[in-house]
Image 1 (cartoon, rainbow, N blue to C red):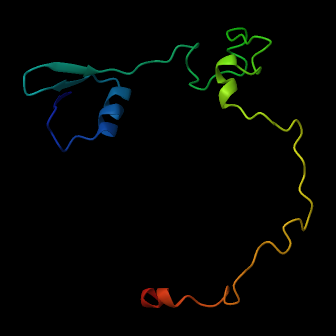
Image 2: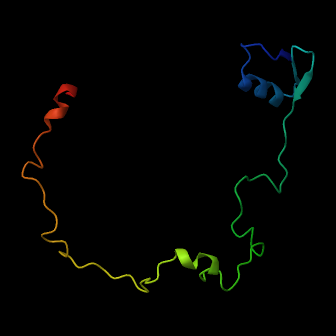
Image 3: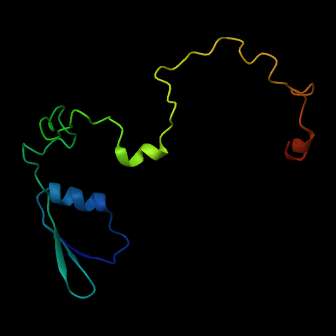
Length: 114
């Protein structure tokens, strides 16, 4: 089958089905260049596009001091870094937050949108 590259009536799915039926498909450009569409049969090694778990084992090495602070960034680091996160106590912000009396009242600004 020979197809004009600028033919708007040709669908890719039709070309794929033609190839699956054993026919050859050629596309001809307006400059006369010819391209062939072929079915690529996956090799057994690359048939599954998803990576296999553990396939990069041994390819990446990290030094023992990977997470140690870098000397170049010491000036940007906090001096008093807490060593352990402290949990907040329930009610520790009591009395510090004030909610307006009309908090749950309808908003008049949005009346024009309803």
